Length: 534
Image 1 (tube, rainbow, N blue to C red):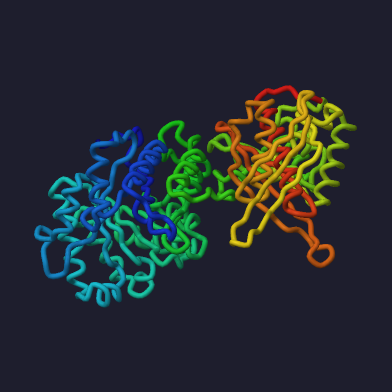
Image 2: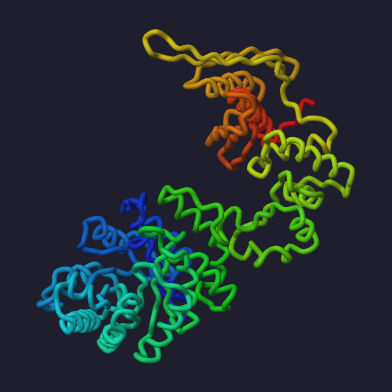
């Protein structure tokens, strides 16, 4: 079903994640994946979603058939991608052009050669025949009621080599009825000033409505896209999270955020910009790639502050060190606690965690010194909020948050003559006045320790049955003598509704893991509302 957007047609946000973005190394989308991403993009409010090349492969053909039946588009129009007709034929007899019509898409993007060398070497035809291919295919599709966009492939390189011919392709497409002609930096080698100058010249010389498609090989795709807008382009082609071939495409999210928040352009339906962080992470989950923590606007570190000087200013006014309110894009400000932390950092972090430090300067000072002391020993609290919260609450309450007291633990790894291995751990602890001894096997000594601790504690605290260890990271810090070194372990745990990280440091990986496990279980009980024993 075709959407009816509340926005006018004066500016287009065109997403090509399902085609160009899918060319990224490591991404292999199923039809179900493409349908899921299309729903997310429509929910975000983009105007156009390029679904792929129907007829070129069975997967894309199936996608268009299923999308017509399964997705009720509320904001976006689905776009089919294909090429101009073959040289020496007509559009009416070209089967791949027929496949574009058969897809049911009411908007079609045609890729056309605009670099003279590509016409002669890749298409193996004449420059005049290439223009005829563009005109014939565009007019054929327009006569059948389709809206047509034309991607001028390698436009900027072609313009540098033969500007008059590159512009003649734009004129031909526009005169044949193309709604927009998109200038493509296919090799991604252009810089913003170059893009702006060329787009302005082509716009003045051709009078065509222009769009921009930028690859990110110079790291300038977002800047190049905005430079093209500055020069008069009214159609931007991007991919979610910048996915794409080689190093990727112009990233949809910073482009849209800049247009809405910096340029003041209305390019999304009302209220959709606040969904940006959620949509970015949702798409990353579908393609099975970890969301970039440092991505502008939507990364978890985009509004994370670490330096004590910054924290002091943010305490007075968050805008002093933030270019926008993170809530505008669905993100949040975070305070990182580290050995760079000052009093303001601790106070703001306490407020973020819901702990009222009550302006107690002595308490805050103790926490600052404690953090710096432990980070010097190898701990890292900016990556382990749960361990920091346990430390902060212990200092605020004047006692540790104790749910159990450990008498001893041990882990044994046994290598057998037949080449097999056995890992066993035993934990002895006290909880609610009861002494518990538990032994468990695992697929490694740390896993055995985790299982034995769980066996021991679940008898007393059934709330722990929900907990699951989801990530485990080890880092060897500076060596001391020979093979001696300090080991830091970070563990991520979930209870099904949230996730938290804890840290442990020791002379070996098992001792460090034990500390992180203790904190993980203690924090899980705290989240579950269980009252500490001491």
